[in-house]
Amino acid sequence: MHPRLHADTMSEATALVLSTSGERVTYRALERRANRAAHALRALGLVRGDTVAMACENRAEFLEVYWATQRSGLTLVPLSTRLKASEIAYIVTDSGAKLLLITAAMAETARELVSTRRRIVGLEQIVAIDPIDALPDWTALCAAQPDGPISDESIGGRMVYSSGTTGQPKGIRFPLANGSPVQPSAAAQLFGGLYRLGADTVYLSPAPLYHSAPMGFTTSVQSLGGTVVLMPKFDPELFLEAVERWQVTAVMMVPTMFIRLLKLPAEVRARYDLSSLKTVVHAAAPCPVPVKRAMIDWLGPIIEEFYAGSEGNGHVVISSAEWLRKPGSVGRAIVGTIHICDDDGNELPVGEVGTIYFSGGKSFSYHNSPDKTAASHNPRHPDWSTMGDVGHVDDEGFLFLSDRKDFMIISGGVNIYPQEVENLLIGHPGVADVAVFGVPHPDFGEEVKAVVQPADWSLAGAAFADELMAWTRAQLADVKCPRSIDFLPALPRAETGKLYKKELRARYWAEA
Image 1 (tube, rainbow, N blue to C red):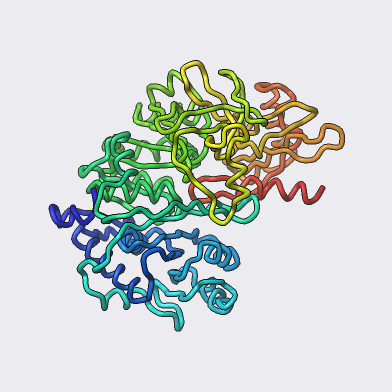
Image 2: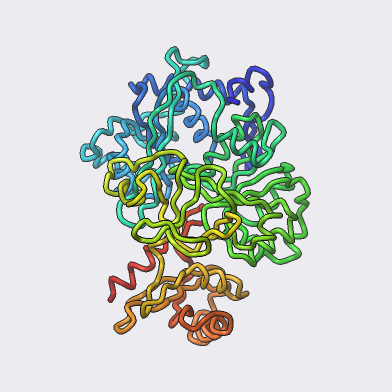
């Protein structure tokens, strides 16, 4: 249940494959590289309890640094490679990171950070994973280190920051555990048991490792002795090619990846042999019912779903068989107990929509954000916590998501959940992506707005907007339907598929 154990018992087994180059890293090599990296971190002056921030693409160095921090008693803060210098500076300062590791793909950002480093409180060093000007060279530093373990190994941790679309991002930090790092991983045990992952698993990682779930799945597979195939980024046909080439057995995806795969021409999808796939897990965003049904029809009942967050306060799962019986559900809780509550914190009856709280799961706090931590707890039951989502449970305990609480539209006193409208619109053949939210209305307070990414930009215009509005009115109550539709060449999304809806909505409210 740790890469070191696999380096001892099956040293030549493949821990990592880079999908584009085909480069393979054995467990013995991974162990040696992680040890060298741990020595390098000590050589840079970091000790147990310190924090390291890293901005790195999907490449071998990410996992080497990950395993190095987790055996050095350090907290790793992974940073999106899409962040600007000011955003990185904020997270580095907030997290208390003493070291920032950054790759040459972000050379301009690195230079800007170097020029402003004195204003980044607590940051002592910026080190380049690839050569960048006069910055210290991480690769050279590691190469000069011994490949045996450091003398003071201990368990490390990680802190993932939110996207920050509602202001500054917030980090979720847990106290460091004690003891040897070579011990069973709780996440690996959970994922391994749920999704039949083990030493014979070939796991494809198409999403950025700096996000919580992709990092958790990838490192869990390596904890279990399986092989990770790492894509630099998701591309629908290259994904299919990788599954066939590497005989992939398991993958974790997000619904936008499903949508992009399903929009490939049928002959392209039929070109690749996907018979090796045994488990396809999805999470991170709600999946429209027609999309998930189409994926099950295509790949078979191997689609698994979970609803959870970095907070660790609850974990909900559903299999294909259960979902076919309960379309639209995200499942039942296996960690924590679900409570649906009104705005005053009172628990609601079965079937009523309210804020989703969990009890009995992991306790968490938002780093340096006591107000946000307090707001995440139920006013009547302080040990119940929420991630801010809205939904209901049925009489069998199956959870159905409605939307984020912040995204609910109130128009003329009527509550409207944008997700329902988005799920309908994404099924239109001319729609590649869509966001629905409320915009100001002088009489009703808010009205429904849709922003659409057309499958073909030539469609963008008044005629297509009228067609889509008529299409929704034929299938939804009039009050839920968009009153206007705008078009964009692409919607702002993270690589995990998370839609930066507040970023879009803010433009319209600012104009108002």
